[in-house]
Image (cartoon, rainbow over the protein chains, first blue to last red):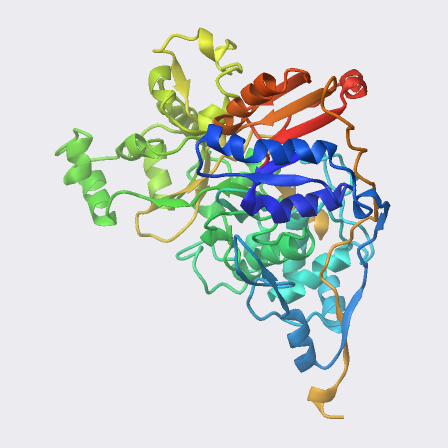
Length: 461
Length: 94
């Protein structure tokens, strides 16, 4: 007997079927009633479900065999467009139709000929099942399960989705590398997926790592980002209101988000993402992030930033107490008080080359030094940390162990300094964008190095 | 044949699912009295604390057992516990 919340009924039914108990009994608790009243309402039907005799339907056993088909449709392109644009109605909590095969926008029809052309850009066979190409995210050779429905896919299936997204054949190795991630979408709250290419491949296929790299316009960034979302829908079976319960949603997922690192903009000695993860400079990788939350822009005007660095004038200089003192200054100091005021965890800092150079000039000779500095700055007294929401869950109701001390949370003094970022490398720095002085912080941790979601593009050429 | 009348084979983008064997629900209990019923608590203490309290007070003839997690991921029963448990309530899943 399962007690859920009303809007989760679709997911309960789907997961029950997925795990072979399609007639599981469940009922809903309330999102709003006081607990005691709520329990009064559902306790009797809940216990009745344990003793009420099974119906004939509930006694049935059998096999659930979803159809596996290579050809979805045979006909003209005009007819095909209607087939691929089919929708189905999703009841509460969506109460609207959702596209079955697409993100809601028109797609390129994946004819056999177009898919064959796409497949020419990889040495992998069309019928090869997508498997882990290294031990980084799974066991090398292990079959990748696409979430949330734990489906599998072949190289051809990935190519079909790449065609639909508008990819060119040279984009396929990146799309295959994304596929290796399993294209997770998260379940509740506000998950957002984005990917970043690091290495020479970005230039090879003409990716935008400069001004407006997160904006529309790039014929490389856009379709690769979109391919992630189409794979999540088609290979993973992600459906909003059923198993993708982003309460409001994320703009990262609307059309997909893909961009590239500007390796030429790195200060001397600073590693690119590929090197951070143990690859060589000439190797190409893709960072696949499923991060909670959105983007926080820098909290200063670019002109104010220039005045701060050039001559020590303006609001930034006043706050940092360097009035009249020319830079370089550590502009991250200006951001720190706001960074973790409303949320915990790591950020990805996308900063333009000039601002990274300023950090280098004031003494940060590597990204690691910046990561360590940010981590130290994230610490706050336990007394203050207790006033946050997520730690109730992350600490298992404060019953668990605090990682930096190795002690139980309840044994720690109130002035113990707790980092609100799990580890220095939960933060991430990516260099990109134009000349205008801007830093954007993408919410969400990237996990520990070595366990992080990084996939080789070269392995899929 | 005009170009717009040409017939194409269009491929399916949908991933592959393994067939799933489906099982009937476990047999129901003839009575609650004297049975061991496990409460698998997954978060939502505003609901699960009064739930456990009321179950224990209003149904004293049941041998209630429980394991708690503050997260949606349950604490699993051991093989031995499964053998001696007659029914389970999972709450609140989300």
